Amino acid sequence: MSAIMKQPKSKLALQGYDQLLSGIQRLLEEARHQAARSVNAILTATYWEIGRRIVVHEQGGKSRAGYGEELLKRISEDLTLRIGRGFGLSHVKMMRQFYLTYANLKNRQSLIGQSSASKKSQSLIGELQGKPEAHYAPNLQALWNYFPLSWTHYAHLLRVKNDYGRSFYESESIRSGWSVRQLERQIESQFYERTAMSRNKASMLKKGSLKKASDNMPPEEEIKDPYVLEFLGLKDEYSESDLEEALIRHLETFLLELGGDFTFVARQRRLRIGGEWYRVDLVFYHRVLRCLVLIDLKIGKFTHADAGQMHLYLNYAREHWTNPDENPPVGLILCAQKNEAVAHYALEGLPNKILAAEYKTALPNEHKLAEELNRTQKQLECVAPKNPKK
Image (cartoon, rainbow, N blue to C red; front, side):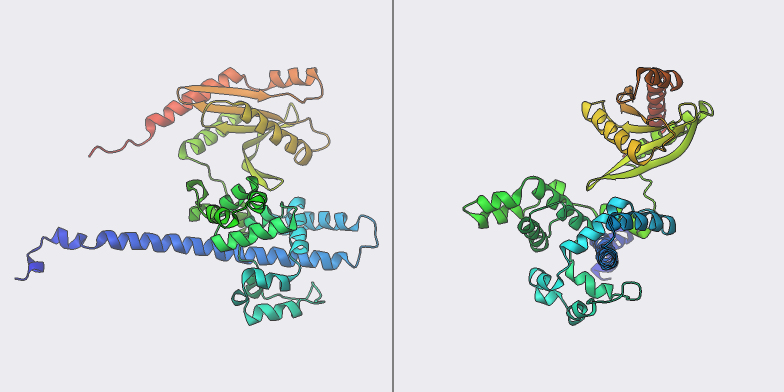
């Protein structure tokens, strides 16, 4: 018998298996990256075209005072009713700003490279001149060649007021393949200004192209980008860990079992402030207090930053989520440290002390909430599957 026939079956089965498995894993990861890039390309092209149509329509009504702001608000409200999330006023404004900032497609050909713009893409410039927005169906595939970065990249670039700086960050993102995190880090560290002042610009650009471990974005994060989820109409009710998700679900049930005062509103409700995304873990409405109750869970100890973030949520909720006849919202921060839990109500900013006293009387006792959180965490840790011994 040959040497192959003499080998045990188990060795034959394992021969080359690791390479096969690794190859499939790399293929799937690359496919997910490509899927995220494809969705982002369509998304970016679509938002540019939406911005163009808004501007073209505005030009017909600019003689009326306040027409632009009124138009954007109406578009936001009507699209939200017809399509769903993703068309808040700030987001619609960003689409309009995106078009106004990148309206000249001819200038972009040198930035992205002539080879990147196909003949269809180049002919698109002529087609867009004077097209009635209500009847024109754009070639999105041709259009997205002019915007090789993701929409999230451009959302960050739009916050750069300096035209030269914005162009620099975009070209470096394309040239060096910067992820969204890397672009954000470079903008925050004023990389453009530091490079402009440097005597050795080549060295600065070389250093800027280097990635840090924190810059890497796995494909699942690209796909779960809030902009992508909104564009696809998908829900994003996911948490950072199974423990956090389990605690949030238990807290939801626990508060509803306290009586009829708490009414469930949302879990993992997202809000956008400027260009940043945030999530409030739980939102309830308290019928007696006639106010929203925002609950944020932290896996770790309570810090001043947690309080500051909650007040940010409360200010946003007061302006955007609270009805005129309702009281100001109240926040509850729950910190689930191992073998310890802390509950803290954010009551500052209420219009008077009497209302604050009413809130404290009607809301669950902070100590009891902390005890319940601690007890639940221990129960979850007890039922968690243990690693099998080898």
